[in-house]
Amino acid sequence: MNDPARPENVTNRQVEDAAVAFVLAWEAARGRTAHDTRGRGAAGDVASGSRTIEVKAYGRAARGQDLWLEVRQVEEAAGNPDFWLYVVENIRQGDPEKFRLLEIGGEALRSLLARAVERRYFTVPWPVAVYDELAREQHSP
Image (cartoon, rainbow, N blue to C red; front, side, top):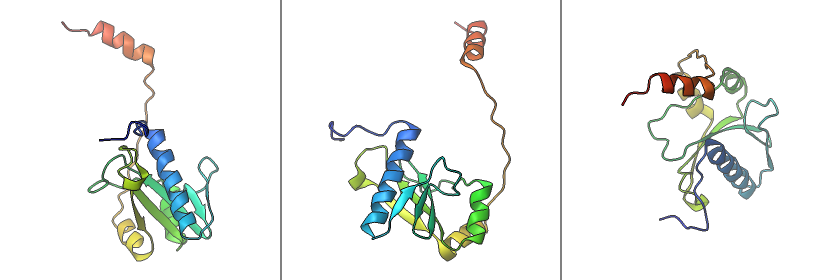
């Protein structure tokens, strides 16, 4: 049961923010000065010394999940031996003491990237007004 004084991380943004904060504390505990680089055009979410760290945040277990990377992150990983993926899982339950961090770098990361599959996607905006109109028109009893 969750502590009522510690609300669960419920939105994707809250999960990501909690994961990045956890990584910053993790790095500090290891004597590395780290800072959040999100929104600054960096290849990763955190810079820590010479490390570029892409944080993958999972509300629950990441076991069996794919790791989604942007093209620039794959390119950075290929050319930067100090590019790391940090998988932070079990975040939605809300207690950082129960988060789990898995560090993937070096040969382990190169091995995973050798299996990468490139995909191409489009996102199609779906305005609420269009949704509402379709729902009204197609309402079934």
